[in-house]
Length: 225
Image (cartoon, rainbow, N blue to C red; front, top):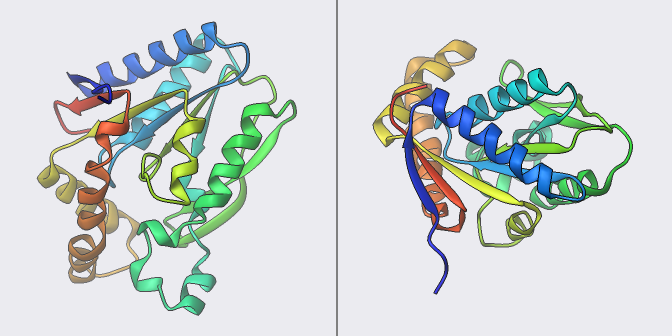
């Protein structure tokens, strides 16, 4: 039988500390780079935890860790429009999943600085060369929604993760966070944002929740981030 993931209920601060500690221990035992994947639904707080863990690791040992977001592998808006799938943006098939897996594989063995893309909510599109993974980084913390999906092409990602951590936040708290997030971007009306959350974000959340058993560790966030 498959091994069930470890389950913990933690505050956001405790989650950051645990992710950093687990990543540091993993890197100490690994001959090369270690890749930790943080997975969870939209609005669960995984990007905040990932970025803070990287900051803490680098505060202790400068250059030790780097943050690698999956969101930079959104299909470009022009491509989504051409495909007729712009209204589904954020769903698994609207990402360049194979390219993301190839990027992680390249990072695992790279001995030189590697630039990567990010996603900007201000322009609702991908920005090239938005961050650089330095050559000396021993720990990569990759973060995204679909790192544990078992279907191709996403299935290529899980074998690249030395440690997979699933971040869970209550669905209603996620809804509230997403309403605030969309409002902060200021690009659309409240009515449009609510419709998008109900039609795209929350169904994605439900799908992603089904992948939690494929993680090594599940963290239930005890309070909102």
